[in-house]
Length: 489
Image (cartoon, rainbow, N blue to C red; front, side, top):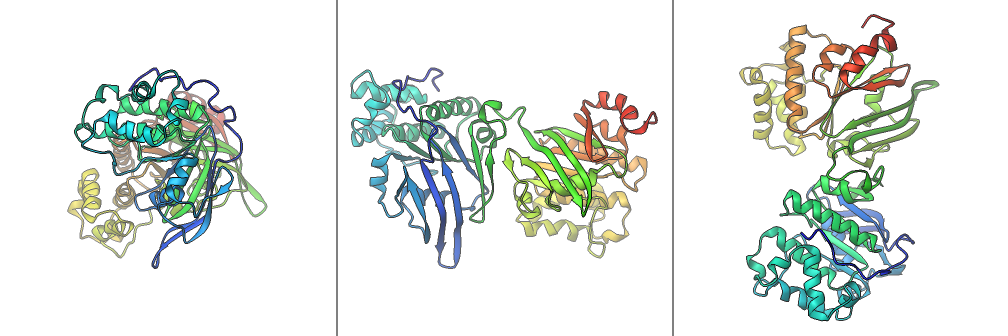
């Protein structure tokens, strides 16, 4: 992709942060008895990139079809530039300034890349001159190809170019109409890492010119790098929404973007306040050890983060999404998995039956067993044994295997070592170290500091309902006795 985009002409749109350009207002889409979109409400503002994320089948593309006019909603409204466009046909929405790319590539395969863009430019003749001034119609097409980084493919047939290049061709055709709103459906599919980084920069440039960009995307690195606001859709409903903490300028490519951020969190049991302003950050891909004595508030913090207990005040962000009001099932869909204190296996079921319970969450049975036996070969030998007859360490292996089968983004381990012999604890923590090599982030709550610190990248110490010290493991080990134990680490 070109590293020096063609100038937009200066003053293309002065007002980049007015009211919402797009408003989706309680939209419902039903296909027979199936509700594909359920009371969806969100906006897209000028000068911003908004991410719409969620698993396959969540309703993201159906939302796009409603916005662009391809699907009539069962009820609800779509407003564009303050006007109700719910019943407006597709071509009129396009002329008003909506542009869209599709998950399924829609290029004219027998035409060249340049001619594909020319077709779109001819439809919107005059718009391209506003987007890229300073030349004739043909020169502006060439400049647009240069801007999105595919000028080298200008004379190639569209059906012969790589998938990533075809995605950029889709964007170029969309931009030929100089849209005010860009609807991008999986735009980075097929791009390599370098192309994706350059594409993210282009999106920020396009937003800075005053456009509103609404993007459906599975590449979370790209989402976190460019989006100002993120909405999470699951089973047709918006289950979490929020501004990206720190904004897109905070990071490029997710390094440094926390998988978990807890801000001034308070929680109480009745009149007894247990969490008193907890601040904690877990970087993506890192292991954070959370240490402290009994009664420090560690387990309560786990319950609040995992949605089992509502906080009194404060904020929680998971992967940049505000989730303070989300329940355990919603958080699980976002990639948060908790292994609670006490392991919670089903004693009257066999090891295999305990593991296969994860298949009810949509994980293939073969994948569940393969993951479990790869990490813990002992479980394969005892797959027909009742879980209640196994040792505490083996039960913990079952609990960890079930969690890992869900492919979590963040794993909460609450007192992994409780009641176990030191040799078993060492074995389990060796496995935790292997888990981190797959990119899973881990928050590990432990009383036994030295064991947890061996596999941790960072550590924090809680006392009296607050985080009183944070740092690298060596620093925390040196200061723990002063902070918590008064000299008996």
